[in-house]
Image 1: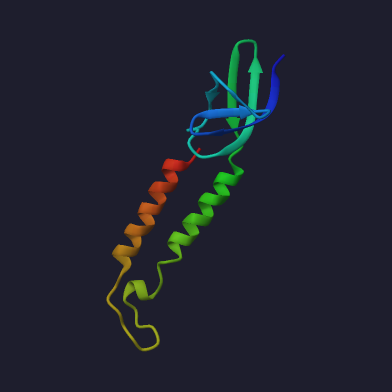
Image 2: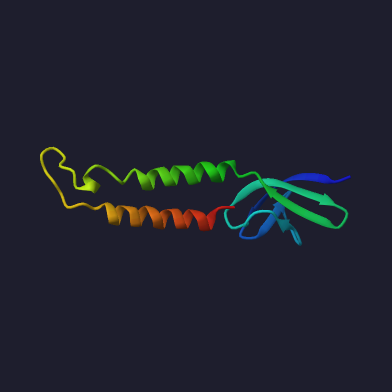
Amino acid sequence: MADILEATAENGKVTAGGSEVPGVSILSSGKAKSSGYLILEKDKKVYVAIPIESITQTLDLLKSALSKITMASLGVPVQGWATPPTLPNDLMTATQEIDKLKDNLQ
């Protein structure tokens, strides 16, 4: 029968009970800090992340990046003033933020 322990992972290292556990197969990228479970059965060690916090953080950052795209970004007059469209730059910034998030996803 397997033992299941609460654990964390970050930068490819799994910690349970305050100690690093070597030789664990991580069922995520293991880059971003995550909480999850360490499953031990005989000589097998597997870490499974519970990514709720990561998903929430990712959605918040995505919302922030996309909120920078406004009517002014499209060059639409705001309060009688038209500004040069900034949408291409705004989309590039949002795309870069999404790429960073993707790299840090568990």
